[in-house]
Length: 505
Length: 130
Image (tube, rainbow over all chains, first blue to last red; front, side, top):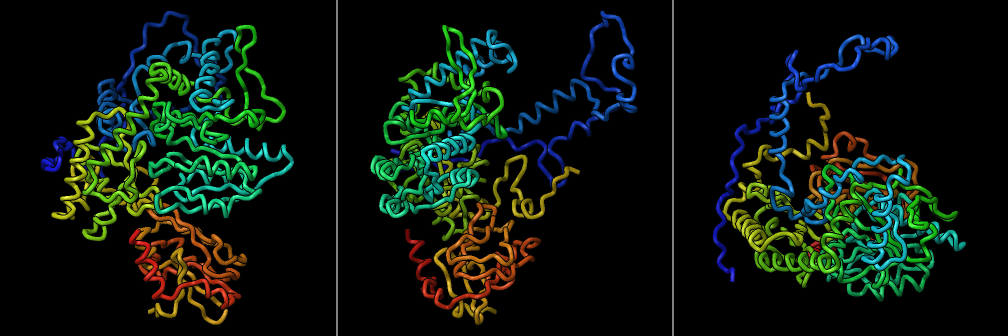
């Protein structure tokens, strides 16, 4: 029982030694550290004949003045980058309730496998005979995804989730056109990720939005009124962005299929389904996988990720190329057939990320993958139970891998928004959860702990959130002014967006 | 000051003021409060014919981007260029400085689908209970 919440102490993080003051950089730039003559390198003695530069490069092509590069000592350089690294607040250093939605823990075995020279040092133009290992890995990974997804064919080409969406929608468009009946509409629920309508619009489809039910699910009756024979695809996220399983998915699939439409699964929340449900078995014709989410690929600062797409047999001819084929034990890259939508990515996709996904799947195995989803679901439900009573949970039902709480009451009573809670969490040593999404929940706090967090971490995080709810009542100003203990305090996002200052000096 | 009783409201939180056949459109006080600080407004093209309920403009806040739907049919006759430099006018003064576009050729019949101030306030209260 955890009725009595021990008052969580003020965070114990060290106060930064150099508190940030406006207009002052936390860490000087390398160009500020520049002192003429300092060097961070030491070349070995020349053991080949010396040749004047002018003999190798035509003089008109040579610089007149040396490039204005910062000149620093090795000591300064190491200190500079180590200090920057220590300012990082990351999934490696702190609990990250953004979960697989953004990035879950990246097991280190993935890095070890990916750094094997046969994977890390290959060049895309290396002859196929010399990269058999890489090609075999890609071929095997396609098979693994086919099994995990319950699909008949997989392309590993797309570079990210939204790219996977675009690829799948282009495939759907080509499929309907090939059947001689081009279709113009894509239907999305109002809880969808913003990328769904964006991908559909980019593909030239008209986007039709359907409202969710009071239980946060896609509404079968609302769908009945919009699904007609001009609907190319229904894009669904399951579990949806509220972390709820769409229990009517089979009925919905039947409705869409009866009208000749295709069912697309946005795989962003696949972390809840591994080994439990295969998308192909619950009515989906297409699905993308975010390997940088579900399959634990690091993707700081936007990449590189990976968005493989799986499809049913009837859509296979339209997939992009090149495709890996095996002939007499030799793996080769082949062009896809005449109905293919063509290339969507240079070479063979983000192979470095794909190697990590392969390592993750192989390290865990079938049982392990199922354990990932079971652990993610258990952790989310435990955390939800700890927070219940302190934060309203708009749809309070057993959830999948994530749940959505609301700061609505704290906002109306004490003027504390989801944003303030997110900022205050940083002071307690936790990263902030996703806030203000999905849009159908006011002042949403979307919390996804993932499978790797221990019971102690979940309890400490719940205690922090509960302590913040108490602070909101007793001392709202403290929460509104947070963070107080970070190297950079509250940023002025409004001015930053309205009058962006894009120069550092 | 705008007399709110003379305005009509949509369930998507736009307001409309009708003078003869010209309608002025903006977003409500409740809407600006919900979306918080507006940082960018994408205005429609003057001369564009729009249908009631059609997506016409986009208002982007620090939270997200929100579609603005035309509460009635008509032709865009003028847009509030001032919002390009000063999107915060929508927060400061949603019913005055923060107007978004004008519509010509508005048919009074379209008002049947809109709410009075009282109905809108009631509706917002009902929404909040969810």
